[in-house]
Length: 288
Image (cartoon, rainbow, N blue to C red; front, side, top):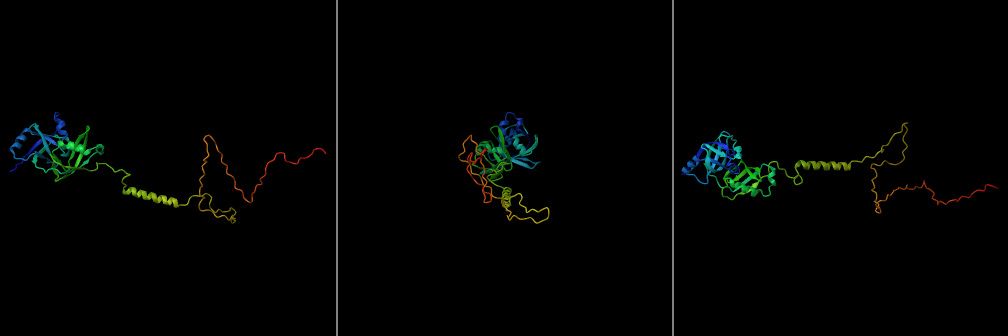
C-alpha cells in the first residue's frame, strides 16, 4: 500500500545558499533537509520524487522536484520565482507533500515580455530550460534564463491535468501572444479603424459633390434703386475648368523663355496690319 509524506518547513530563498544559488534558480527544484530523505526512504512512494508545496495562509500551491537533501534541519530552499508564485516571505511556514502526477503531453505558455519574440528559436530555448524542471502547474509564472536575461512565462494550460510531470516525456508546446503585444496595424484593421475609413470616404465624397467657390457671382443691386440692366450673360454655376499648360519640350538648360499670351481678335476690334517702311512719306518743298 502506498504511503504519503507530508511535513512543514520554514522556507527561504536560495540566495542564502551562495554555493547553490545558480543551480536552483535556473530550474523548478528545491533543496530539502537530510531528515526528509530518511522519511521518504522509509515510506513506500513512487518515483520520481514529486512534491506539492502549499502556502495554507494564502491558499496558494505549486509542484516541484527535489535537487538535493543538504538543507539545514527544518528548512527548505526555493527558487525566488517559486516563492513569488506562492506569496511567501523569508521564514514563512510551508507544507511539503509528496504526490504522483501524470506525464505531460501538452503545455501552453504566455511570455510576460514582448522581448521574448526576439529569440530566434523560442521552442528550443524553452526545451533546454525545462530540463531543470520536474513539474508544471497551471497558473505558475516560471522564469528561464537566456543570454544573461530572465524571461517569465505563465503556464496557461497543461494536459492531461492541471499539474503534470515533465521528466522524460514528449510534450507538445504552444505559445500565446506575449503580454502587451499588438498586431501590426497594416495586417489587421480593428472596427474603429474601419469606421474611420468610412468617415473619410463620406467626407471625400461630400467634398467632391460640393460646389466650388467662385468670386463675384452674385446678381448685385444698384444704389439708386433702379433695376439693374442685365447684360444677358448667365452667371456660371461652376468656374471654368483649369487648363494645364503644355511643357516646353525644346527647353535647354541655361536659357530663359518668356511666354506671352496673344489677345484674341474680335470682329469689333480689328487692327489693321501694315508693313513698316522707313521714309515712305510724300514730303513737302520749303521754297517755291
